[in-house]
Image (cartoon, rainbow, N blue to C red):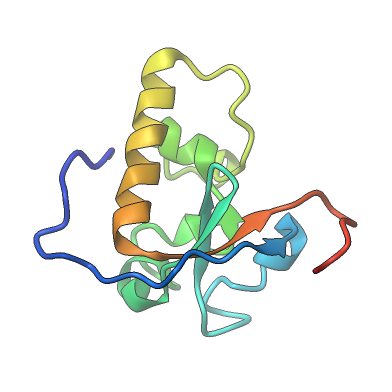
Length: 123
């Protein structure tokens, strides 16, 4: 499941943004409640809306829509219970897979924000 390849063509991305999102706020960007689809990896929020067939409702990776799915990506798991940000207990190989996924997203999707603790003041 971990990508290990560069995009076939150069993807032009916007300047990364650092808009703060709590995990609760992120949930609304699942392609159902909101047409935009955001996925967070290692606390960085990516706009994956342009690939809604994959991340949107019914898509093969829809389990990650509106979530920080770092654990599931690291474990190469599509189980809903693994689509969480918790990386405690992952082994070295799983962290390598997670880093590969972070690189994959970073090369293809705009960074639109970061995950902040619940209740943190918005800018």
